[in-house]
Image 1 (tube, rainbow, N blue to C red):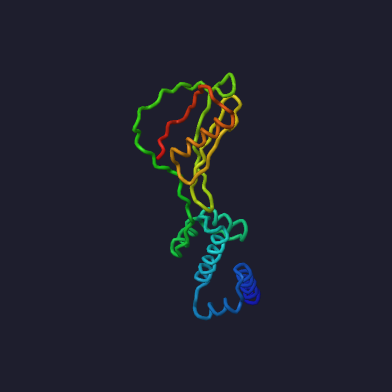
Image 2: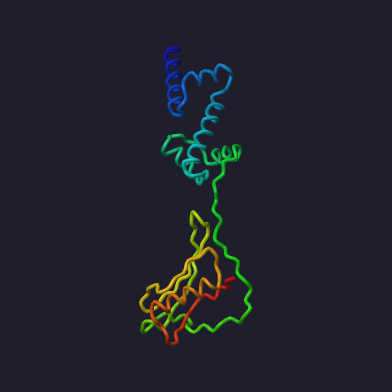
Length: 197
C-alpha cells in the first residue's frame, strides 16, 4: 500500500512539473525547505497568469485568463482567485480610453430639422447626411473621420480624416463631396448638430 501511495505521489509531482515546466529537482528543493504544495502551486500559477497576460499584449483580464487556464492548461481555478493573484502582483489589463470628444457649448441657435425623419430621397444630390466617427489608430491614437453620404444612392461621396475634430474637418469633407459630385444647386445637408472645436 505504501508503495502504491509513493508511486501515486511521484506521478502527481511529475504531472505538476510538466504542467508548470519546472524541473523535479526545483520542486524537491521547495519541498525540502518546507514550502507547501499550495505555495508552489500559487507561485507557478502567478507565472502562468503573467505569461498569458503578456502574450495578450497586456489586454486580457481575469475572466479571459481564467478561461484560458481551464481550456488550454486544464487548471480549474475560480475567477476570484485569478483576480486576486493579478491584484497582488500588479497585473492589470491595458484599458483603452473610449472616444469622448469635448463638445463646445452652442454659440448659435439650433438649426431647423428640414428632413424631420424623412430620409427618403427621390434623386441624387437632393439630401446629404454627415457624420463623424472615432477611429483608434496604433500610431496616432484617436483620430476622426468625417463623412458625407447621399441618401438616394446610399454612397459616401465625401470624406476627410484628421487627428483633431475641428470645423475644418467637417467643411473639408463637405467640399470633397461637392467637388466629387459637381454639385452647384441647393441641397439639404443633415447632421446631428454636434458642436466641434
